[in-house]
Structures are given as C-alpha cells and as structure tokens.
Image (tube, rainbow, N blue to C red; front, top):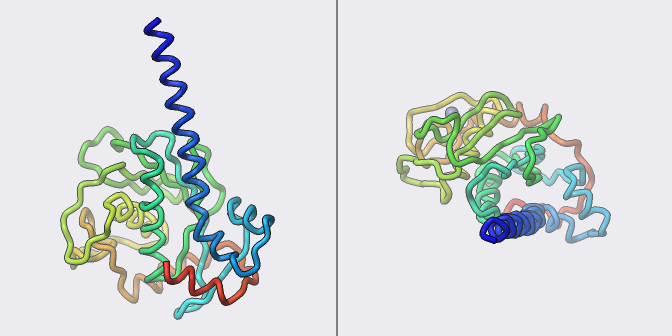
Length: 227
Ligand SMILES: [Zn+2]
C-alpha cells in the first residue's frame, strides 16, 4: 500500500515536473515570441521554439548574435519554474552589454547540441561541495543550482544566472579577469560587468557560433534590447 502510494506520488511529481518544464519552455521563448509580434505567424513562433527562426536585431556595436543554448534541468534540484528568471538574467547580462542573445531550449535529457552551447544545472558539481561552476567545453558546462558568491558593488540578481553567464563567457573565449568584484569574469563573485575588450573578444567568438541572420521588422528590435 505504502509502496503503491509512493510510486503514485513519484509519478505525480514527475508529471508535475514535466508540466512545469513545458510551461517553462514556453516562457523561455517568450522574448523571442515577442520579437515576432510585428509580423507574427504561428509558423514563425514555432520556428523560434526550435532555435532556427528569425532574427538579428541591430545593436550599437553591430548585429545581435544569437547563440543556441540547450539548458539541461533533468538533474537539477530546483523547481523548473524558478529558471524563468534565471534564464532571463543570463540573457540580460549578455544582451545588454555585448549584443549576444542565447536562444534557449530547456530539456530534461542529456543530449547535447551540435552547435552553440550546452549547460547543466545540478545540486553539486563533481562531488566537490564548493564548486560553483565548471567549464570543460562549450558542450560541457555545469552550474550548481545555488552557487555561493562573494558580494559585488553591482551584483547580479540570481547567483545561478551570474555563474551560468560567467561559464558562457568562457564558452565565448574569455579568460578570468580578477581586478574587480564587479567583473563577470572574476571567480566566485556576484559581478556581471564586461569591459570593452571582453565585449570585442566575446563578439568575435559569438560571430563564429551565431545562427544565421534573417529579416525581421525593426519594431521588434527595441523590445528585445529593452528586456
Ligand atoms: Zn571561470
């Protein structure tokens, strides 16, 4: 009886997690759906959800580079819905400063992408309690569910977003820069700032990984940049 109850409960939890994940996946593509507001068709919205849609809005430094990013939450201990704000902040950090936008796909499995980057969120990394983030390659990035970061004068809102954005910085060729707690590329702090050289270097790397440009209306541009 008890066993049946727990099996049922586990199934129910799995269903709830999948439902939450589906909702999250929809939420994760909302900024892109917004992009298509001016000329939207069901087909274009579908394309955005599958990472191969439209769009390269302008940015003061040149085009916005769109990088596919598959987010693996199957091993995470956090509620999938909490990731909506976390994923939004990763894009805020990179889009507002460097004109780089991660086109995210949220999954529960471990299947990596062939282009772009893959990131896994999990409760602990490599069995090392103090390890916040780990970058081995663009398709082997791990971030602890709740990183412990030192304060910065201008901190990111979500430590998990800051650490993920930092590891994505490594994926965009950036090394560590330890001269201020406000730096995104400083180890173990809450800062999220990039300097001009880092923006140039990251954009150079992003240009090599970016999805192809497609024509979109200018009206949608401002809505992305304002995010
Ligand atoms: Zn690092």
